[in-house]
Image (cartoon, rainbow, N blue to C red; front, side):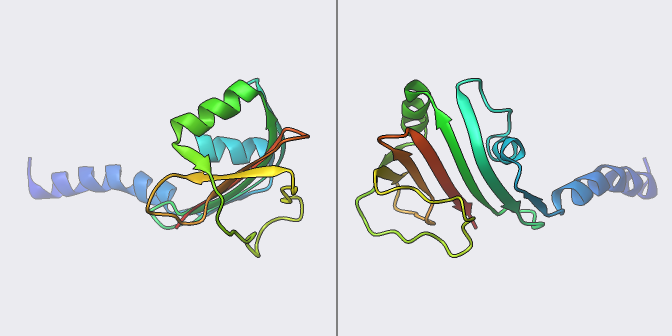
Amino acid sequence: MNTIKLNTIFLLFLTPFLLTSCSEVKTTNPKETYKYWAGTKPPADIKLLNGQYWRSAHWTLEYIMYLEFKSTEIWWNEFLMQNNIVEDKGKWIVPTDAPDWFKPSDNSIRYRIESDFDQGSRYFKDTFTEICYIYEIQI
């Protein structure tokens, strides 16, 4: 194959990647928020209440996600375990760009990923209502 054909083939494969990976995503639909965040539809044991998702147009796929939902105890505990999430006793301030509905109550237990690298993601579960909130950021 000559160089022109190789360059053409390379461009044909590269163009769709560049066009799809460089577009910003924004939604306030809870189902879409969950799907962008988790990469799949929400399971039957989750009732989505509110969501907000933003992903940058940058190829590194930076994102900020807020989610309010109710889940089974089994789902929540598996989520914490699989993601190495532990209770957070430190100080935390709700981000200024949080949606109006993102208001974990004083009855909520706050969690974080157990890691030395902390960008500020937090996970909450209200001990009375069982409502969960997730704020996740990857910048």
